[in-house]
Image (tube, rainbow, N blue to C red):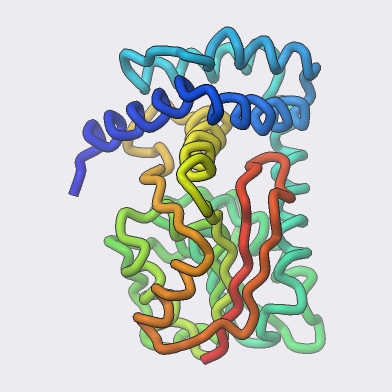
Length: 278
């Protein structure tokens, strides 16, 4: 397993290679400009920031580069609208989940982060059958008063079938061992698993997806503490590969499998929704 320094060096190479590839850069520029304008700066200013600081940029050290980019964006006022946009993002996820969650009982929100989505689910989902939501994550990012379980080495320390259903929103590609985390999700869910993943269908989209994932998690959600940076191992796969992985682990075919497209402005990756019944 890689240590934190090795992770950052591998990620540095991936980020730099994407920025120095002309075809990848122009797709990155379009998507990242959308992120920045969504956060309140002018399109021309966003494009200038990217051209000046991203295109063909040689990165001597990733930690210092992340600090610099975050500081520059803070100076431009990018983060003033972030809390509002994050709430909008959580409601957008909820709209993609409603109608696919199993009503009643307990739901596990794997990789639930700040807990905004879990809170929305608890407060809005099927009042006829009370629903409890527990957040599970590698680090405790909660901004809400809700139950929490720590994920350690891709393990959730509860019994088999402890939750009626489980949801995982763009969580698996952050694991160094997504297969183990997928297996654990299906182990703890009694009836249904719903997950949304970022998918890439070719090398170009993979390069761009890795860059966007890094920019969103390490610049927009910057932390100076290397131990608290969200893991970005770039474990993206095509949708069919996720289905094959789950078939191999569980023998289950998806109840539904749907391309959601690039509908999230704040993290513009190609998202795909998978629903499985046990």
